[in-house]
Image (cartoon, rainbow over all chains, first blue to last red; front, side, top):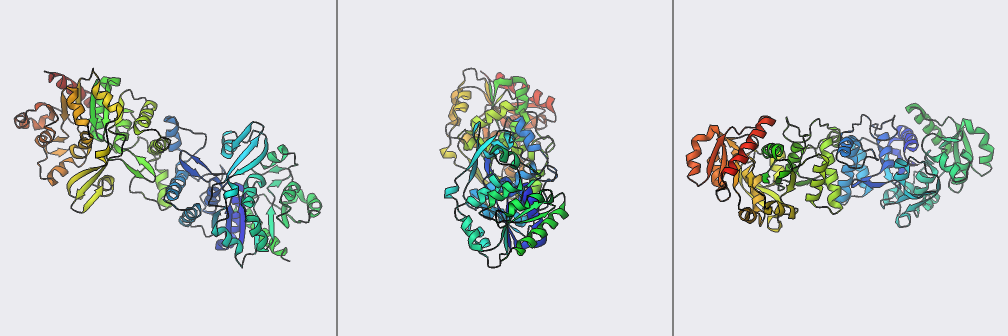
Length: 312
Length: 312
């Protein structure tokens, strides 16, 4: 059993690679601090990206949403004067409407996610980090912004000064998350190459989560989302600069220092290995850019082998 | 000023004809007893049909929904194991989602309908008969059925024995409905060729509505939805047979006897004129089948002229 922590696109790709070699022996704990309500519908962007990616229906070009998407709904919303800044596709909408119906009927986010995953034929378990609402607030030079407003409406252009995870104090790991982390056959925890500040941090900030990692007593490794000073996708590198950090795997290592014993970095960044290892973190350098399915699988295999090598 | 009462397709067509000659001098009071909740969304089939028809975006071939509709949402709902018996199109869905959002934010059905009509450039006023929920229950040989289950899921195949309008006792005409019926320049009330039992009856059964008609002191006319023993569309003729009435304009006349002073029937049914006039109802026989826009306009013009001729 492997537990992976993931946010959206990059995390979803490695989770997909892990699922391709582990199947039902993989549990992915997904960030839900990006979640928000739009047009009365509960949207879980990271859960959906991971679910669509593992279900084989993700829109690879866009990096979000469903493949072969159509836009009749959004087009009509525009005609009727509704909000169009968040692009809801016709197929994607089915997820949100079914989720809304289930949540209103009293199901938990964990339960409806399970049902959707089953229908998509996903063998791995995809779990929200918590069933309680947690919402990332982006502190910026222009004031506080709800995450999706920062991310989608403002296209990450506003310089950030920090983050708050609203509701985090009252959140707790779900029973399913606990079960996965307390499983006797758990071998390792893998932090996927997601944004450390707004994807992985919310997960590990859920009260009790960090202790579950420690109690698991297994290697915890991370894959750097920063390659050669840049993020493959998303604002991670930009955020680092704005927070006065150098965008580099060394910054990732420092950030995860108290959590991980191993870090996978790109071969481009191999010269940084001594700096990172000086922090007490073992480094594995390899090709980390996942351009296709075979890249995902190979990186996943290397991550599992690397984590196993760190046991004891 | 003319007030029209309408259900779905047939009523929408005459309302469209009336709108084409009257513009903002028309108010359409629409049946909402067909309304129901589906996938957490409030659906108002008759309001939508009238709105789409007057807005020029109705799907003429289907008789319901929006023109140039796509089905990505429904297709994905099927894939995810959700209910598909009620066919929600991608464009149609925009109406339901915006309506749900507005109602949850505290708007009335009247208010959100007004907003949607404005966006569709509709000059006539389209009003729900009430802002309170009224739900038609179809009594049948197989027990009680909610209207949409009878109408869509069971395709009207179950023989009916009667109808109950759940919630009607607590409903009341809206302020906008009252204003329209109390307007000093009101000239006539026109019952469009909709189903007498499940489209017009709910409207006139709203407590206080019938008195508003009487107090208006203007001619009330109806257009028979039955032509030559059959309904143009829908189960009106079938229902009449099941309730032991002959499907004929004479049955329509008897049903509306206490309400109308004039009835428009099709030339096919002209021989029934003496029978109907014996009930104290003036008859106008003309071509009532509306195959195109010009039919709608001509019939609307004849209805207005006929109603005016009944003023003393």
